[in-house]
Length: 434
Image (cartoon, rainbow, N blue to C red; front, side):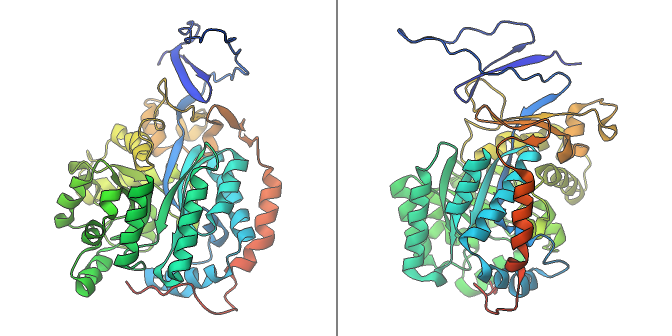
């Protein structure tokens, strides 16, 4: 068995990891200051500490649509259900959905989520209240016009300085819903203000072919010629990335990443998933996400990382593909890079943020524990999460949220959910025809 370790924290950071009972090195003291005594000692005996999980791409308030758009093609999923439902979005409904999403993620050991949705200011308030960390990209289509895009960019600017646990990105929806001119403008703003861009691109091979037919370029080539890749981007899905796109992406590997959500590709029968092996060979960071619960049904990153390992073995026809350590690296360090925080999140190391999940692996589905890595990839359930810290603060203790009242969160969501999925008003926010 591994030696028991003590993790020492101060000012939201990990300061030392030493064998239990070993005195950690004394932190440097500034002249004239008084050392601060530890506030709390958390007993993790029998628990496994791992870096807090990162949900690399999601639409958190879509938990309110969970189970309301099933057994549909991707076209009908958008056009018959989701985009007509989103006509019903209000700030209150988004806030209520985001609170439920934050509760679900924290209880499952997710400490950071990278979000792309409307009314992002309401999502920020839910994140702040719950104690989770978030990167928020206010979504916009070209169809909202210059004023709508201006408003979304202004929201990004506001969110970027709102709270230490909140970062912000620009959020054009996709290459097929945002014009080249608007993508160029987005890239100009991103470069000038040091912001990142989070958007959907090359979600399916059919989308890629439609882009070539209509515009003479793949979605990745459009992101290149509009400056989005140069500014720095997180690309959601990328299942339609072609071999000819890889050299383009490779040029921007220091500031471009791809988020993969494997359950979604299986459920919507989207063909091949994200080309993980090819992107890795090109040096492109890859993060693991869930997408929204309207299609993924949960915000469980454990489920996502498990499906990633299984689908890669299946696609490569090689049981040795995506080994345990590589899967866990994608869920931790690589997902931190995809979230734009490669040096502060994703590992239990001194100097990194104290975002920590403690797991209880004593349940029958994890026993006997021959290899903890195997348990993490193939056995662990969200219910095994015992304690969660974000920036050194306990946000889940003994499987209970410390900052949110869960019965209140559930009651609010239950009371409002039917108003969001109501299709009787007609209309749609957009039409899916890439």
